[in-house]
Image (cartoon, rainbow, N blue to C red):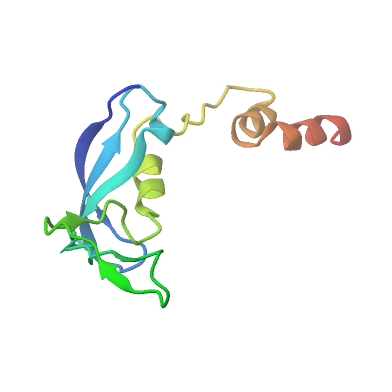
Length: 133
């Protein structure tokens, strides 16, 4: 399994409409439009630590069930996932240089079809070729 690198970015959050500092897991070998994989930390969503509650159990051999408490681990834990939907990943991936191929124009005859080929998806281009004249 390949290790991802952590990169720092500052973007405007689409949910809160404020600037946010992000720590993002990035795969540098991927294409630019899929380079940023996951948000590790966000300044708008602080990481809060918590102490887990003690677990309770029941004695199985006592007639009315009697409960007991298991020993709790008092080491604080942190939440590993963010609670937002991470829409900022799409913004970061779209803003990467080279994410979209620049539109080239050919000179002279057929510029319209060449621009359509570069910007439309193949199914729409197929319809244009079959039914357009």
